[in-house]
Length: 139
Image (cartoon, rainbow, N blue to C red; front, side):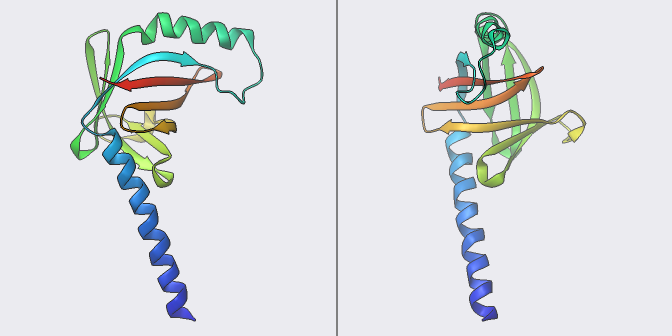
């Protein structure tokens, strides 16, 4: 009985590692440019949140792209100015932890992956009191 249990745990761990590996492969070495900002479909209707999504799309996120590189290096480029940090995949590749360049989690940002394929990466992020979906495309 113990051998079956151990085998099942190893199988689950292996499958989890495969999904995380697929997320790394899909994310890495691409420029992910933000092209749209929307309100998550399951959020209750809130006019302020909808207005902020439009303002963010046309303002802050008008010229933003992200890169995920080797050694867990993360680069966010906003209006041509790069800022670096570290990233780690959590929860089987469904959540990305973004931290300071030294890996300190004092200012950690958690991003929920809502869609990821070779050309599109959508992520749920928190901004103030609201959540938004950033829609990005591979450049």
